[in-house]
Image (cartoon, rainbow, N blue to C red; front, top):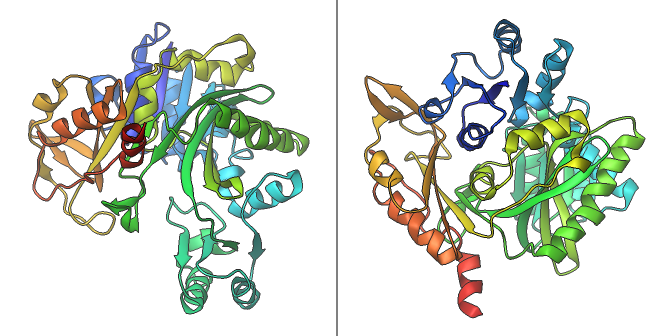
Length: 426
């Protein structure tokens, strides 16, 4: 099969790496790709949001299957464009991607379906939003309703900060995504991610992971796209995975189907483990980043076969298997991230790091220039390692991190600390 993968980040490199091993694959293209993806796929210079260009390319090359990996393209309807052109694609559709495209929709679906989540209300005006925020206690969470590239959430520690956040959003602080605002109670606890695969009728579990959002050690500093992750996550043992499926994912897919929406593709469930039990934080309509970078090294089954089964409605006929090994990834970032950062510095030590035992390096923000690989993104690399324990995977990952350098690079030094502590306490 000829496959087109859309995207250019660490998640896409991990998926390209997995797809390239499929016995079904005859040719893998990636648009636009990066300096790491080009080692396993032919990269083509078409932007991920250039839907016309992507569809034209797929027609020209007679692509058999398109894999849309990222939220922005799915929410904007790229799956629908491919399918309308007669090209099978890994979904979901634009209608189903509302699970990521509207936080208010998800919260209301939870309320109507009895799915545990934080108390909330959805607003179109600032004054009532502020009044409701003042009833929830502190801290309080203010969210832009629409897609905001993972940046549309503000946790306010004071009433004044909550009011400022509400004004900021309604004044266009997050663009069109904040024409409606969701105000919800703050949930204290530990967060985990669980993934499932859906074909519109059938749903099968994939695996769990836990990521680290804050930029600095000790979970301090601003939120980022994710500074590292590991899988499996001790907070999601098999019994809790069953809860995730039966109390959250299956009711959600059924509720969508009752509304005439068939969900096909990867479904990402963010859970907060509170004193009252697990509650939904969010849904995403694709693999997470950096969670994908620890899921793909553990996947023993063929990724392409699984994605095709979800598209073709035959998930009941496949079995997805996982390695028992631990996978842990550390994000290496450019100085200044998640704010403004420098670009264009040459990265050294990649080959040496890649030769270390159990290590696989996934590129996120890289380009090849004049024979060198340079850093062009905020998160530049996902340095991933596997091991029999979290401590072993962590040690291998940091051995590789310490081999790689470019001007201003940094990473957290405590990825996996909760799981390591649990191992040591046994």
